Length: 580
Ligand code: 6R9
Image (tube, rainbow, N blue to C red; front, side, top):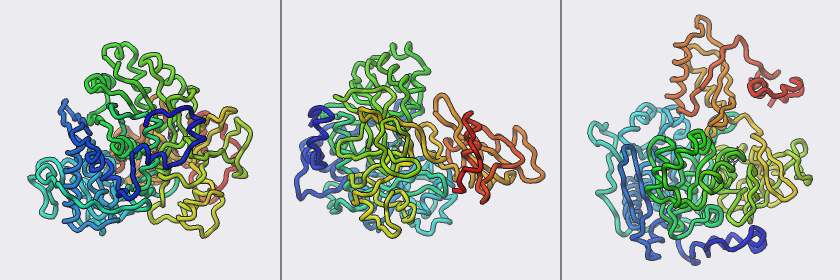
């Protein structure tokens, strides 16, 4: 189903069941995302349609039909079953954006296990924290990345199998299994009969305190993902869609796998480093029609200018959307000027599983605004002091949503108290099922915004210390914990520092242990230490040495103070800052 009318009309007649109509879903069919993205599309007669057009480094290309997705994902499903993986167990996918990643994702879901995609750029420490927290049973990785798994496997008691699915099978260790799915397609696989509440995908996201939290999603999320894909990304049967996100990030699964494929739409993946020229070439070569990207990429494209755009034929493009960070009005105006199309902003989170505040075709666009709550989503702005919903347009408060949308996360793995704390109005002992359905509660996002008199939402900033660098959330705690493991460092604080392209980059303040002096070598050494342990994104772009870090009375580092100084903002009365 395509555009059915105005925002108001859609809101008026809204029911999540419309997603079922959009998918042609009939009562009694198995609700399994893996099968819905492959077997079901083939059953609709689209087996020979292209599902994935993939391009890697050096222009290497591969194409897969929906039938290929079906038999190859079943190949992974059967292999995992034979390996002894049980429904509900976690299978980590740790690879570059190669076809194996997308296809094994469907395979894991088809046999009822939980898919846990992680960025291949993660270093061993980032990987360890997430695998340990999830009790991950099996990791699917590649020859290129297996080394990082080797480093930490002894510290992961739940990890039973390490499977290498791509690369040279030689020189693997005895306990490592090599599996090439191309040699083992499966025609008939009995798909696991998952239901709405069956766990599906596990994504880790960073907070201010503590290690990253695992946000657990369920198969029933597909209604939200499919409907937003249809209405907001406006995907239609003959589109060629490109989502630039890595499936290690929720955008790369909700809208880089589940949304488009559940609708049987062809999508492209480019697995090579970013250059504006390479991106334009990719759009031209594949005649991309719908493009979903992020502000950091858009700013990089802007920096490379309009002349470059003119060298390519981008006339296939008909719709552009963005997520991950504030999309400044300049970027919207620029894209309209050079591509003839504005990027439409969408706001959502790992926890929400699907878009929450959106701009979509047929709606009036206000450049710089995130748009309006998607039909079926009840959003509000909560007063910063009282937590009551504000009524006055322009009042800045916390973005909040009434629980109950289909793709909402169901828990933070092993962290029920933190999960509960995300719901304003929840009683002390409230459990996840009621938190999910109780319409008197508000789920609070951790972001600040206001709405205007027309109901459009305007982003203000995060309400916590999480660093958003290039659309990726990095937890200051993770960086600080890793920094103090460095022999030279006594104490550390990490904050986001303004950056023209990435919005923020990591800056750290450190105090040194006796016997160490600041030097260029030390600086490089600390940067590399973090890059290798955590990821290139978490690597500090600036290190400031200090004698002492500002602290609260209870001894917690006052990141907000450091951040205010860095951003040239009012530091405020320090005595009023809470000991949080
Ligand atoms: C999908 C995703 C969520 C956080 C979110 C907010 C920021 C996302 C935004 C935006 C301004 C937008 N964010 N979309 N900020 N305008 N359109 O990004 O998930 O990685 O969990 O990040 O990203 O701060 O709370 P996730």
